[in-house]
Length: 164
Image (cartoon, rainbow, N blue to C red; front, side):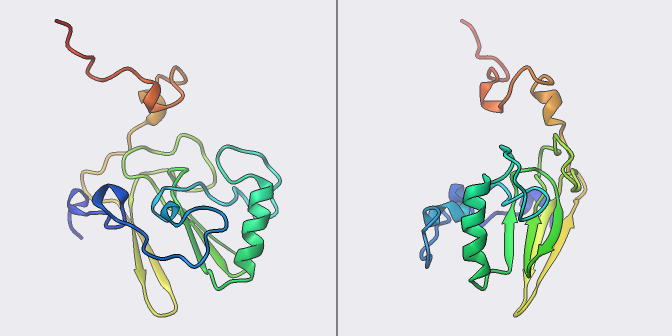
């Protein structure tokens, strides 16, 4: 495998990736397919937990109902910065790890950073998590001052602007 810094996310909006066609935009615009997204649930489809880490139960129920009536077999999300791979009702729910910041909270997955490789064949997808030499799992909690800042965007610029 190439050095991970040489790999490009060809589906990234930042690189000009776009969704040309989607057959259903009931829940969100098709452009959301290119965005990192929260998992549908944390532990299982019937979770009634309200959490900022996953979809709210009412939206989840509508989505799962539509997915159950479709041929969707793989749902990928990366919001929680960890790898987890579970199957419910014939649908594979894959959480992919971050490439820079380790998972801040344990959610039952592997919180180490990694690069996810999806190899699609006719009826299957092979998932491999690569951890290339040089990949560092940064501690996001430490960077955010262990609670001092909720989001990276709240932090002052680093290095600070030059006065003068």
